[in-house]
Structure formats: structure tokens, C-alpha cells
Length: 147
Image 1 (tube, rainbow, N blue to C red):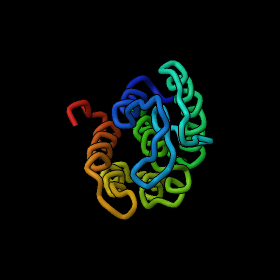
Image 2: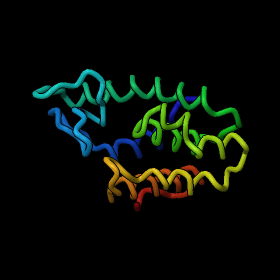
Image 3: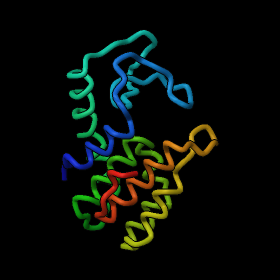
């Protein structure tokens, strides 16, 4: 599967687009739409470069989700999981209770598991609370745009 425009829209909304590198809430150098690989202080990108970086990286995150999930997914569920994994990384996906619950086909329990991941540096961040709520709604095929 590939992430849809809806999933990309969610990621873009919550990542935001920064054209100059910055340190995120836990001190990781970041640029564009949450891109962290090989980012250094003082880097700049254009909006077009940020879009390209995101689309290229999303191919990798789609693969992570496809490898980890062994049950059938609807597009909205896949999109939510790719967004979650893009933000939290494949190691967290593979070690999560969320994945265990999902792979047991307990789809109704997944949104609550998604929402548990709302901390950075050990602190609850309101932006992560909102993002997890949006991802949980998207997973259920509901409107997330007002979150």
C-alpha cells in the first residue's frame, strides 16, 4: 500500500514545514516536514525540497508498516499507522502494544493504543495529544481535520 493524500495531509498539518533546521522538543535537528536524517545546524531547504524529502521518506515508512502489520488494513488505517510511525519511528512501532493488539485483529482497541504515545522527553506535549487524536480518528475513518 501507499499512503494517500489524506495521510500526507495529516502529517503535513502536524509536522509543519520548517525551511531552516531547528532542534525539536528532544533536541534532534530537524528540517522540512519532520525530516531528521543527516540534518545539521544551519541547513536550509526550499519548500519543493521539503515536499520531495517527505515523499521519498514516506516510501520507507510505508514499507515499515507493511512489514510489521500482518492483518488486512483499510486505507485510512494504513495512513494513520504511517503517520504514527513517521513521527515515532519503526522501532517504536515494532515494540508497541498497539502493533500486538492490531495484529490480533483487535481493531477497536487500536485508537486507544495510538493515543498512549503523547510524550516527548518524558513529558506530555499538547501537540502530540492532538496528533494522536487525529491519527486515532483517521484510523477509524472519521474526520480528523478539526483536531
